[in-house]
Image (cartoon, rainbow, N blue to C red):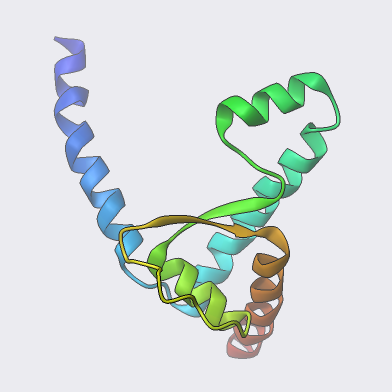
Length: 118
């Protein structure tokens, strides 16, 4: 009985999450997402120095070299980094972007978000 309430919400939450991946972010929200993902990649980089950390990274799916992004968000990040997005990117696709490219977009967005805040 206790699981019945949460089991019924799982498909709804999953579909909301999938729909959110299709919507583009504004510059501030994209900056926040990149900040979080780059921080996660940095933590994964620190963890990979010891066996337990590598094991944690493997099971959690975190990478020190790549960050996960949906198709629309990858296009936005590519644009912010000054890179032309490849033609094969589709809206419902899930992709991994190298951390150095994500950092380039993050730095560019930092200037935009900082200028907008002033």
